Amino acid sequence: MRGERRDRVWAGGMAVLVGALLVLVLWRGLLLVGSGTAAGVGIGVAVVVIAVVGAWVLWRSVRFGLRMQTLARELESEGGLPVDDLPRRPSGRAERAAADELFERRRSEAEADPENWRVWFRLALAYDDAGDRSRAREAARRAVALHG
Image (cartoon, rainbow, N blue to C red):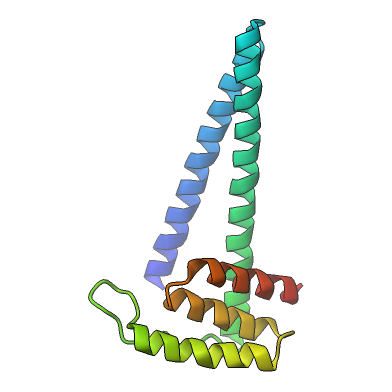
């Protein structure tokens, strides 16, 4: 639990720092737009667009993390959050054979009940343990969408 709180504080602190950086970038972009020179306006518009896109990406990432936290808490309160008991390498990564075996079980569960957000959440965790981050994120998005 203590590590979870530390991770949350770390993620929140990083989001605030990135947000502050985006505000500074936006401000500099607006100053360039106000310069009145063609080059300044052009670069300023590009910088403003980059800052806006960055803010949108930051917002989506934070919102996704908060939704995943909500799902994890709900699953935990139901007693359905899987226990992380996979054997680990010294690096902290799950041993490949055990992660693959768990992944196959979770994939079968998701195929058997494709409209259940709980099995997709557990599948996302299994993908993550297997080291497939992009598919873990896809499965997590599916869980969020099914949850409502």
